[in-house]
Length: 269
Ligand SMILES: NC(=O)c1ccc[n+]([C@@H]2O[C@H](COP(=O)([O-])OP(=O)(O)OC[C@H]3O[C@@H](n4cnc5c(N)ncnc54)[C@H](OP(=O)(O)O)[C@@H]3O)[C@@H](O)[C@H]2O)c1
Image (tube, rainbow, N blue to C red):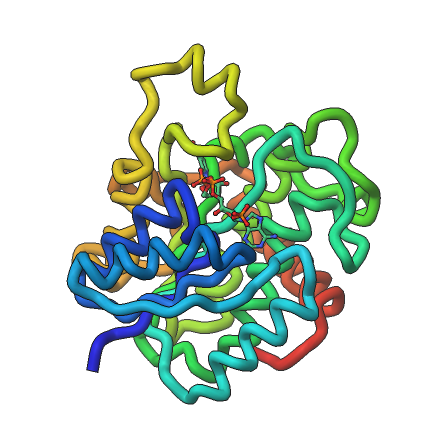
């Protein structure tokens, strides 16, 4: 039996590269996202690389969609060996999710929080959860919980940074609550993807990583023996680093977890 990985946002960028790499490593990849027309070709690439795959309908901006998707996976009864919480939105996106959360927080953190919790029953013992964060999390000085229910202000730099801090805190707290699962927060580096605004892509030009290079540490955390005994840590370029002081705050991690649990409802992980 092939090991099974679920990757969110596999239709482009780092998620696509991660899905294909996992196919090459012999995984069956559940490719979860909103646009089958973007994701089905990636499922074919996964198969050409030596794995197999399937599309799963998932909109992280809707907790109802997240629950439906997770319940389909749980109902299939297949254990998940690797969960890659990759999907995300960058700056220049504004508004609220279907459930009334600021979009960066709602999609980048809360949707993935709910997905991981709902998948709890099929996350096998020894499974790995890898969440994509960003070095931008250093810009967030804690979390203003009141602001998470208000629409994005300006162009969303602060909101993106807060959501990426939430990703690191989530992985930290997940490691504490689920010691039978190994969890990793990964900054992929500055990679040339749709998430990076066009002007920045133009200025940074050749200095940027390819999506495949961006996926390297993600795959490493998902599969390498070198990190098998670690959990709850933050990585860049295959190196464990200290995240920001706020990302090391256990009380904040706990508060974020408890609030996220109340906001997302659903089954206990
Ligand atoms: N690129 C970088 O330099 C960089 C740096 C640091 C961190 N990251 C992180 O890396 C991750 C991947 O980003 P990327 O750079 O590869 O950008 P990308 O190509 O834009 O990929 C993001 C993916 O997320 C999906 N997505 C967005 N909203 C979604 C939703 N509501 N439901 C389900 N899927 C959704 C998108 O799919 P559709 O829009 O097609 O539905 C897209 O496939 C993100 O978490 C990002 O924060 C990237």
